[in-house]
Image (cartoon, rainbow, N blue to C red; front, side, top):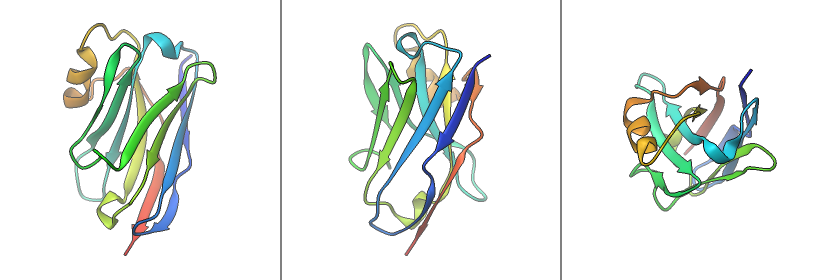
Length: 128
């Protein structure tokens, strides 16, 4: 049974930083594609970043240069380091996994959000 559990969310002021974690169980991270998505109040869920062992990490435009996705395969944990946070980053952040993700398929998952499993989310609130 695959489970994803996010943590690390909270309330910060504009310009602050947070590090989100996603603890995974029931899967091998080395062969999967993993993602962070977010949903802001009143908006649709959107991709934040994706990571796959043999491909470059990929970021949404708003995340480029401020957010860093990484993972520890041995610890089965996905991370999202978020720096210089802005009020518009306020959202529920979700990690997700696509178990079978050959080649550049992870890029399409960022568009389609067709992941196999999702976490329950962790709230990030940024005040001005």
